[in-house]
Image 1 (cartoon, rainbow, N blue to C red):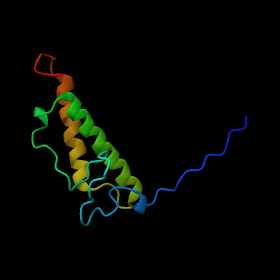
Image 2 (image 1 turned 60 degrees about the vertical axis):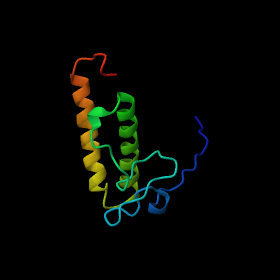
Image 3 (image 1 turned 180 degrees about the horizontal axis):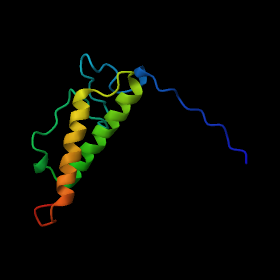
Image 4 (image 1 turned 180 degrees about the vertical axis):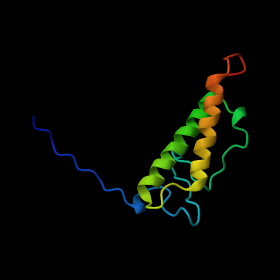
Length: 103
């Protein structure tokens, strides 16, 4: 079976969000798809709706991917901590009974 050749653009630190981490925190991306360490994370994750929490989790996961791909040092410690907090909050919600106060 012949498959057409696919060209992939190389991932370089200049092409990723999070390229300057471990020094000055990387800045936010213009599209708002990533959550850079310099951006604010809500203080109380429990006050967010499930949809808001899931969107925030998605943005942090994209930031993690970008940092791992764009730096030999790996992910920024702030991004790693945020991911752990979000995963813990999602687990808490998964383990509590659903009700009118929760999505």
